[in-house]
Length: 250
Ligand code: SAM
Image 1: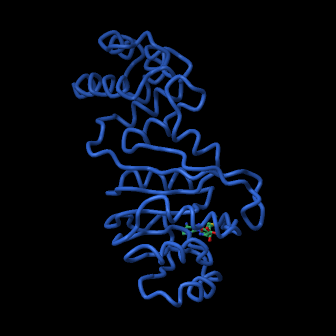
Image 2 (image 1 turned 90 degrees about the horizontal axis):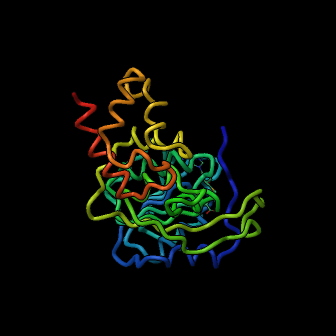
Image 3 (image 1 turned 120 degrees about the horizontal axis):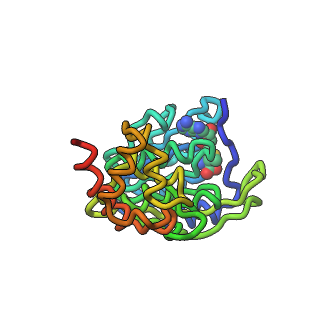
């Protein structure tokens, strides 16, 4: 089993992460607590911390790190199958091989704020702007649900063992009102991100459950179909989603 165990070896980075948002009175969830490197800093500031860690070999060190605190609950569990609901903030120096999976699970949860330490290139995709090479399905799905801001970069030398990549800290703040996106449309469009919307839809006819001619006819009823997918703004993708949904239901 892969576990992505690169531990924070620099206390000032753990402190910096724990201080990004005010934690007084908050209930915090931490994913991938490891040996408690970040957990301790969260415990000093939050009302309560639930620290999830999958590896039982790390558990004695985690329990020992937080033994002075009575506001920490250490749970041996797989974060992929744990609930993210019911917390004011979610934190994690995430296992990088699970970054997408845990992020998408967060986006489907009732979350307010999240602070994650992730591979730098992954974070750059979360905060990307339309038209840039990093503008992707990940950027669109994330920004439809939350604002995403890079808070800082963490060089690989701050971890032990030293990983092959640098990291960045991202702050996600849930939007008050979610944007009405069709996730399947976003996926299909960004599989052809350098093509026009029209061609992307025609190429996706099978996935849309349509014959090629039907997909062409459908594309002609939609706005923005002459535009390259990679140039579409979030608002334009929402417009396409809301225009497409009633046509697909027929
Ligand atoms: N929080 C510590 C730190 O900041 O140094 C450890 C971070 S390390 C990058 C990722 C941690 O996630 C490891 O302790 C690993 O065992 C744990 N982990 C990996 N897969 C997990 C999963 N599916 N559920 C929960 N924890 C997991």
